[in-house]
Length: 254
Ligand code: NAP
Image (cartoon, rainbow, N blue to C red; front, side):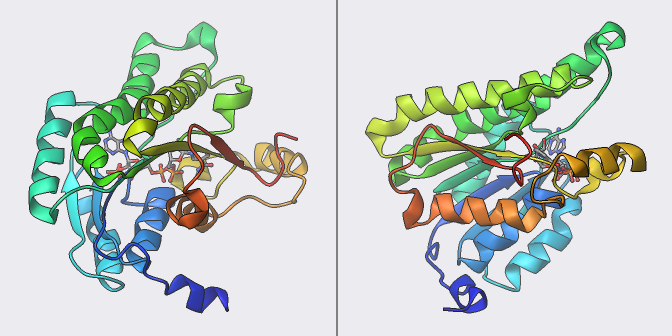
């Protein structure tokens, strides 16, 4: 089967998926891939307007995808949003916690706010959605995927806040996997390496060239390659995988 026709397999028909950080980059690629599989996708970013293009692209592949806006770090607002999505889209089968931010700097000079904000969005945001969506996910025997990072596994000078948030996501993933296995819910993390998106666009040319040298496959990754891993975990290949972190980094961490 050609990749194009295998993409047409709509094994998520009738399912509802919620993807945070869906306005651009990795989240947008994930939302579009899930729509290609037939899922109704709730596309979440800081504002619904930011997700308008993603939703249009998703609805070209399936129907019923909707844009929502929320700050993922606001617990009460996330709870309210999950209730509304469940009502409007008819349930919730898949949660992809992808929204994330960076506020890089060496620890010695890192303002407390930069630590708090990165933890609040990247880690607490995932906790907020996981808790708010837990009942419908248990009912659906659904799946949770948390987008961590290789730096959550290795650490990274200049990213103590970000690396801590991403390592925290791995701990959250393993704990939730244990709590929810008995309810038939698989919970996994993906740890991407260097992926070409807005988040990495600011890297200076010298630093980018140096980084490239350390990637055995000799290139940066594409958002679609992370979406393909999400696709794998949500498909039959993921039925017996839980509590794991899949590192997708072109060999960077070898
Ligand atoms: P990106 O292009 O910067 O997009 C970030 C997304 O997160 C946007 O949709 C943004 O929404 C959303 N977001 C940020 N703060 C939010 C908040 N408080 N509430 C709701 N939504 C919020 O990032 P990306 O490169 O696609 O990264 C996606 C995920 O992969 C992140 O968790 C990142 O840490 C992780 N990751 C990326 C790489 C990489 O190399 N790119 C590597 C490893 C891990 P708005 O458009 O509304 O701002």
